[in-house]
View 1 (cartoon, rainbow, N blue to C red):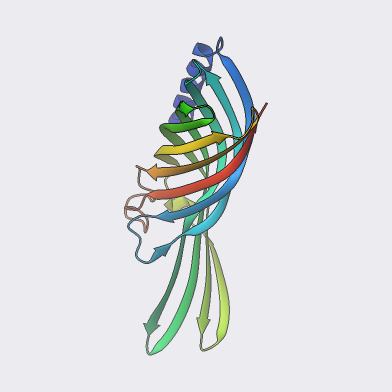
View 2 (cartoon, rainbow, N blue to C red):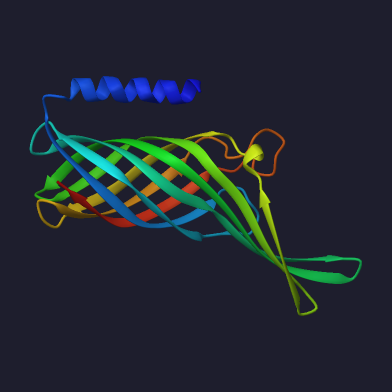
Length: 205
């Protein structure tokens, strides 16, 4: 709750300070390619993001862009294990979803082309594990909610590029580098961090 209140207060101060600036609002959506650091054999897990965006222009080259984004992240892990001479093949998907709040500074190198950089605050909304297990050609599936094992708050550094195709339509690519641990102490993901590449489209009004 303290994290949520702190973020809300920061956003309120930011919007108050920027109230007199030129502003555009819009929506964005795209594809995530996510994984988790320090997890053995972790692979990229495709996901998606969707959310709202605002851009406050200071000058022709400099602006501030806060966002509110639902982001489906996590990792995929394909592995085999042998117990008592029985080998089981696992296709393991860990979906970890957040409501992310990036607060980005934008600098336009040329007309339409900009670089984005800033902190991102994430609030956990979902943590589900899906494991498809194959033993001697026979398949079974196991689903598990492990939200209690994941930290409710995530902090990352976001950096990317954006290009305004027109005055309204834009494309962007971004990398979110997680700083805080995904898992709680003594849990499976206690030393892992989010790593997410995003590519998508947006529209500003």
